[in-house]
Length: 288
Image (cartoon, rainbow, N blue to C red):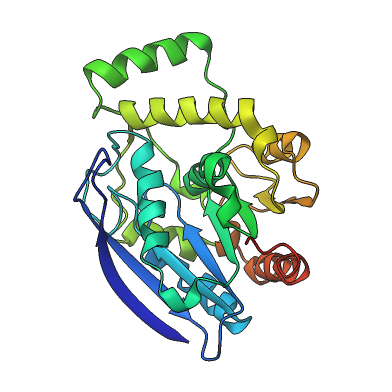
């Protein structure tokens, strides 16, 4: 496996134009058969996916990823985002930076948690660039659905106090493996910041968007979710499975697993399920 790190800048027109984002990639020792574009979740970073990358490169897949604006080693403010589109701009910039020799390889979009919401909404306009997509514990529906009043208040706070921290995440919901939780809490690139009023509002708006327009997604889609996920409701993945327009789709809910299914004790089963599904479906569904 070959590992590379780099940086890129968000393009002109982005709400954070010129901001520098940290990127990294893991490449198999031999020729790659496809590229995975990995989109991580809230208050984490690409470096937490080393084991994921080792598994995927061992199966012949190259993995390209970035730290979102406001995350990890990238520029930005922890817990905040000026607009949700900045996340999409980062994915655009990452794909634009791919080596030219990989241009004809199938691309697979893989998003976890907030990254699942970023990925799902990204697909509404950009799915033609991918052979398939995988969503892991996507934040399509909140564990506790906000009331209409809360949505109204969030809209006001997003305008008058956009950086105010309003939502905390319980690290104990990350994994049943206590070492994973301890490592997460001790990670200097995990800020521990609350989700800001602006980011919370942007997430609600984009959850509503994907729930309204899920039928536009038609590419092969695999949804993976922990049945005991307390941070992103499994109902979100079930909703997508029922409402997307894809002819090739599969939903797998792992009954006892928590939020980070790629970091649970059963992670090898989950990762094999993922790459087995990819091996079955990407060859006949490569975009032009």
